[in-house]
Length: 275
Image 1: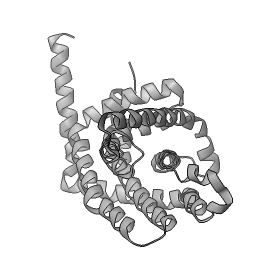
Image 2 (image 1 turned 90 degrees about the vertical axis):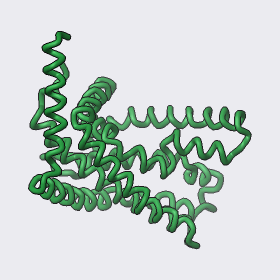
Image 3 (image 1 turned 45 degrees about the vertical axis):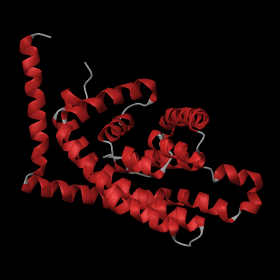
Image 4 (image 1 turned 90 degrees about the horizontal axis):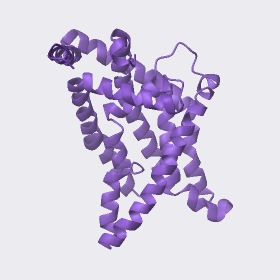
């Protein structure tokens, strides 16, 4: 890259960073908040109407353990619960993302094939987590230390979900992936585009990321802890926790979807076209 090209690139970065921060101006800030809240209300209604029943699977198994016998342990394991969480997160992307299509069963069924790669990733993470747990226990000989490390390394724990999922990079990649044809090529292109959008909107994305992480730790996570220590049945506790989490995450995704849509349309050549 020539000096002139490098200078032009830095100019583009500076321009994009400055324009992204304009969203905090009084007028645009008001529009952004109203658009985000509107998207959140519509997405939350659609999500719980279409997929709220999935959150009842674990409480149902817990209440009917005698019927399921030894299979109940699998359905109540953190791995199965974590897989449900991530599949539902995929549906959050589909509910939140802008679309001219009516978001009915036909709409969602078109994307089921895109979940195949997600399932492979989840299976791979589960295997890596199992091996890592064994190795960490061999090193530290302490279940408590292993648990603490696992909570920061893996994604199946609630506290890790609060830190990882508000990541702008994760959200942008998810939006680009579900706007693609899916498959390996779609995933690779989504990663490239997501990294590009996260970089060119870095100041704005960073501020929003820390804002939502702060909400997660100061508001949402204390509620998780509160309900965990209350003397309520596990099934009801699980249901309340998951409803709180998905309300929180739909709000996060709705805000970033507004930024994603705006930038993808205004700067198509920069964010979408892969040269």
